[in-house]
Length: 291
Image (cartoon, rainbow, N blue to C red):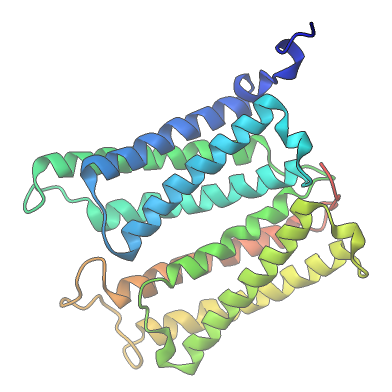
């Protein structure tokens, strides 16, 4: 009878540096959302987003570990290297967002009115959320882009965060200029999803146009679009003529449009920097259909 163990299981999936990072991701992710669900608590769109990030990243990480440990990923009709690289970068960006948002809106030093036990659980959850970000960033560093790989382009998946930031009311429809910014975020989001989908599925060779050159041109266009948004959004949100330079005192914590405007402004600049870096990398990174 043929043995069912040995070479049928890939032990490197859990013993290599990347494998150990993924095990830590699973452990920290589970701990974070368990602390929040058990006693820490969450509310409003920001809290829901944080819980989604932690549970989503945990589920996909478990899926990746399982597939690599059992070699099941070889049965999937996708470019596995591109998929794991894209998810690692996306999880890094989403987890750092959650690691900032949760303590910002839910952690306080005094016990009133939530109670000391709830406060302690929220502080502990914030600590593990920070650790979760670090281990996802470690995976990105360990699998960072090298010549002949598509990994660096997956950094532009950060466009997903722009749509997430608009979940709360940021009053972007008040001016045509801010509507233009939302159009920029949405356009870059859609195109990025399409490019990543083609890269992950390994279908770039089926396109009738040169995929690599088109991506470089798109990245240059995205940089120019984000430059315009990086100028327009702060002016129409924080200039006293159009908006408010300071947070209104009457704004409820977790439900304040000014807070959303600030979050979007910060990630506009972060995303602009990522697109610039991606454009620089695209000059020496060669796209390949399968890794």
